[in-house]
Length: 207
Image (cartoon, rainbow, N blue to C red; front, top):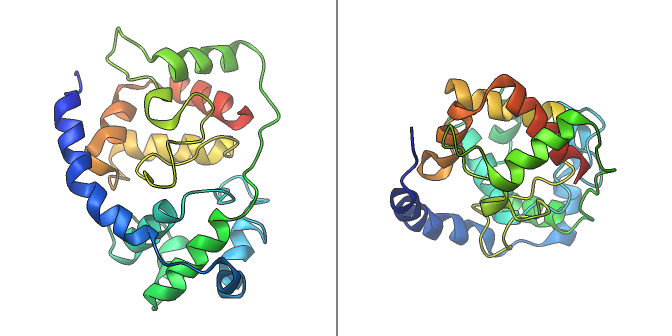
């Protein structure tokens, strides 16, 4: 299966307006106190001690806000996050919480080595032309920092927990998660083998 780049771009154009609208108006200072419950899983500074919970430090505010909103609207589901998201009943509180985590120092990976990381780097940089997999860097940047805060469709993934990345790619592959814009990530994940998912996660965790 080959991904139509034009179809993807059209889908992004449609979804971008609502995503960008979410990103504005957050108060990071106010968000520190409002994010107290969130810190229980994601850490005070947005760095989670549990590899099954994502690091949020330095993540784009618009992306964080969209994910929480998707949990609230059941577009994305998780036994822990879904009920937690439901407790954030104020849109301003959500903006402030997202702004707080976005303002934290991004996680810096410790690097990765070995054959698995090397395989992951190859997929990250060049994809897999034989199976139609698009290189991760094309959307998430050479170092996994995404594109820019003004384009939160492509989130920061550098230094993300390996276990979390594996879980999300697997969920997209199986259809358990399908809230990605235009279905681009889901389409790519479906083309990845289990070994390729693990390799990419290994490499990304070290960025």
